[in-house]
Image 1 (cartoon, rainbow over the protein chains, first blue to last red):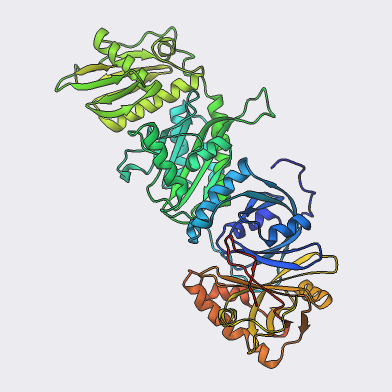
Image 2 (cartoon, each protein chain N blue to C red):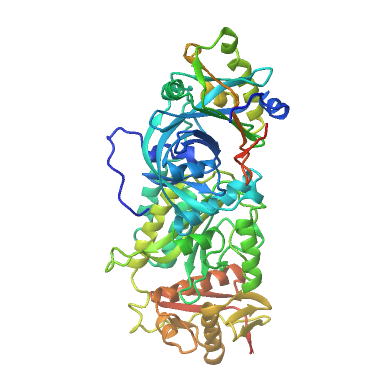
Length: 465
Length: 161
């Protein structure tokens, strides 16, 4: 949220952050407005969107009486209920403006599509705008008899602290990503997670770390791709804003329709990320801030994505926790030592790999998109495909097994974008795709900026034009 | 704009069950106020509605209704989202009669039954609806204006008399 911060409240005043559970869409809120003559109107709301500690937004789908009233008289009062305890709160609101694009609009649209489908109203859903309100005051309604708050299975604040501590000291990008995935699993109890990195040339995102997709029937998750703007991951990347859906059913057009379009149009072999039937999803952008331009919006360094078959699995607090973890990841990714720093003078250790035996693996390369197939099965494409093709050619023609990052960056036949991180990300992707796929062809790291191609079967190369 | 005759049969039938009932008014300065009601009843001829409310929890709204006479009440069936809004600019506040004081008990029981199918427990619904009987206040209104408030493109359309 841009604009001035809300005026400081007394230290014991109830804050919007403390009652965000009421804004999860479980129980409709109720809003009172009045026209210029003072005639009141009361209406239920399926979605009240938390924007920041001083603002909420309401979805503008139809031009109804509530909307006519706030345009005439910006004063409104909203009543919400905590879905866990039944505690009720009233918020005094002041209407500010309506946004029709940008991060707030997109994150509401994503969320509303889930809610609309949840309540069987998907066909009437169309978000025209996000009506933004300042929260002027919050009061706890002195009625009802709230239940005690349920004990949560874990402390998110503690999980964030320990996760951030666990990321420190990572040797390289691959190690850092593995530590992040382990933290999601062990500290946050996440069952399905992906970390995607952007291809700076195409803008597409590709998965380099995954958790919990082995049973998906579509591979481990490594190598899955998404275009900016597609689904919750693509939207989080494009808008640089967390996107969270708490109720999601299979008829939600949001991810599914996008999924079909993406997969069919771009590359049939590359699955769209995620579970087939998710009920909760949260995608958080990983931003790397440039220290020389501290005020500038961060550059997209990746997307952290978690999902669950359970409804309401990820709350506002989960979103904050993972956004904090993503911020730490972004800072650490930027601060990693360059992978090619120490490699130049080192002499590669001679290979000790036993000679390749058995039936040959057919390695087929299509020059049009640098896609590589192993025994007719798609493996990888793009820069990572070009890297693999160079490695197997050098291996078969020259008997080489040891390579350096530096020579790949200088190789004329690898169309690498400018950034060093891009090469390392591609090598991680290639290494993990190979590990997923066969086992008779793999990449082992042998030192900083150095690696070995391990070939356990003879290779037969086929270049297709 | 005031009606001479009461609510039509369809609306009366809709209101003759336990619904989510929410009320709004505006004070002398035009500031809107909102409150949750615990029960409601339509008179047999459909010409008068009574809405029962926790007057302590909603003191500002009760005072504003008494002062301005403005009242809007929305009745919503949670399982279907079907909603009707009824407005009057000549509403009044009164202490509930003995008969009116007895309305919330069965009304809340019916509401619990309606919400049970949506995954809400009885304990939760009672936690929201709980009130001290001595705090109960009756708001009376005539159905001067009736609107279909079911979410969708037709929300807000006046229901003809």
